[in-house]
Amino acid sequence: MNLLVCAACGRRLSEPLRLLPALPERPEYDGRKGPDGRRHAPSTVPRGTYAIDPEPSGAPYVPHPDPEWLGAAIPGLSIADPDGPGSLMSAGPCDTLVVHPEDTDKLLEPNPASFTEAVCCGPLGMEGPNRLCPGCGAEVATLLADCVGPYEIHFLPDAVRVVPDTA
Ligand SMILES: [Zn+2]
Ligand SMILES: [Zn+2]
View 1: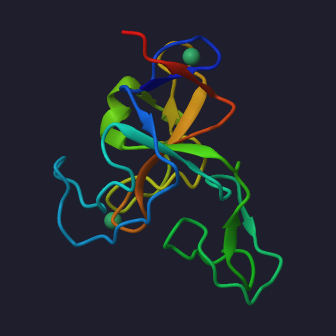
View 2: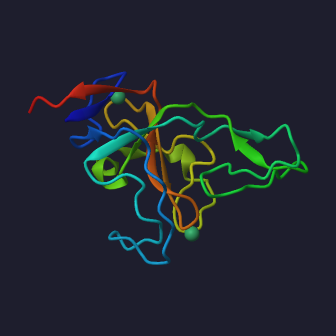
């Protein structure tokens, strides 16, 4: 098993995790509340695992060069460009590390800079990483937890290190 630790200060940021060979298919939101009482889809990755997302993920969101493009800015969610004719796409990093929120969120701190984000049932991270390392305050991850979009925490690949769990 591995742990995710902050690349800047070494603080442990996850429960013990096993790497999946690929990112699982994202489950549909079934309209029910999660175990935490909030409305969101089931987690993309099972408890105790993580996976690498090869696609660009998270902020910044920029207009797609093709105004006819109708792809998803956030997995499963197309977002119209408020300033133009087309849709937004993620220009965030590839290879983010996707973790079950219950395996990590209690070890992170909300980013006060993201409290201005307009949310429906939960955050989508449109304004950038909404989770900080409690040890040093570095922006480390983005929680996606709305009824639209997936239920995932994405760690920035440069903000964390994967280390063996020696405990
Ligand atoms: Zn919602
Ligand atoms: Zn840190």
